[in-house]
Image 1 (cartoon, rainbow, N blue to C red):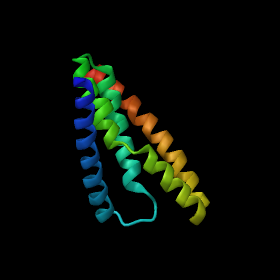
Image 2: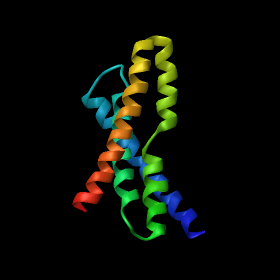
Image 3: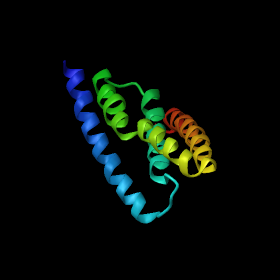
Length: 119
């Protein structure tokens, strides 16, 4: 039951962080490309890579990885934005798919490297 509560609280805060960062990035970079979600998913993937490689209390992992970062990253938003882009500009839609997959996997790997070499 404790893990369920931890995941819920983590998801709550992760979603709030995502919302705030999405607004901030969209104010700074005005573009039709979904840059904010690409950045958020890449950043979340990096931290998931870091945290998965570290050894610490499993309850804290539930809070941070499943809750906080699960609420922070936005694959469902990515999917919706890509479908929307296909109707407007298929080239941007394919760019979004490629960049999101490539960058998120790359940043997750970098997170693993950082945690193994510097933490």
